[in-house]
Image (cartoon, rainbow, N blue to C red; front, side, top):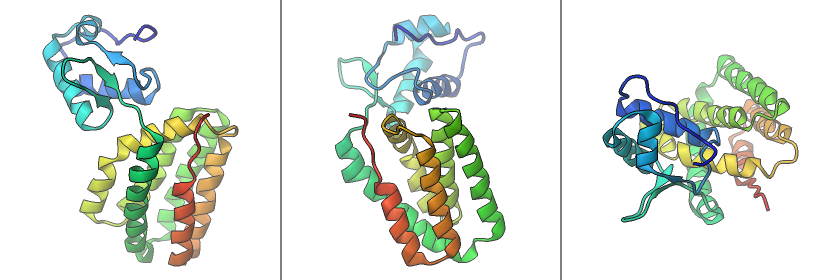
Length: 216
C-alpha cells in the first residue's frame, strides 16, 4: 500500500461505502494482486474504526477479490492460469452459451443496437488505452447478453463470477499489444450473433472465450 492511500472518510462510513471504495481501488488497479491490506493502516487513512473495515474485507473475500488466512494479513486476490483454463472458462462458456440459446429467438434490433452502443464505448476505450473502461465494456457486453435470457438463476450464477472474470480480463489485457483487438473480437462475435445461426454462434463464442492471452 506504499503508493496508494484511501481517502479519509468525512462521515463515519457504512460497511457498503468502505466495501465499494476498496473494490473500486482493486478494479482501478490501485491495489495490485498480492498487496497486503492492513486494518490498522486503513482505519487511520479512512478515519473509521476497524469494525466496519473488517466487515468490508470479509465481504470482499466472499466476492473472491481478497484472500485471508488465519494469523496472516489479508491480500488482494490473484488469478492463476490454471483457475482460468480449468474453472472460469468452462463455467463462462456453459452459462453464456445457454443464455444465448434462450435469448436468441427473442432478440430484436433494439437489443443489437444496445450491443453496438457498448462496442462503440469499447472502441473509444481501446483508442484511449483505458484498460479499466475497456474491462467495463467487455463485461457489460457479456452481462447484457446473459441478461436477455431472462433466467434469474443463470444471471445470478454469472454475476457470482463477475469479479473473477474482471480480474482475469485485467491480467490478460496486459498481453495485448493493440487493445483495439479486444474491440475487434467482440465486433466479430456480434456479427455472428446477428446472423442468427446458433451452431455458428456457439462455435464463435467458444473461440472468443477460449482466446486467452498471458503477459509473459
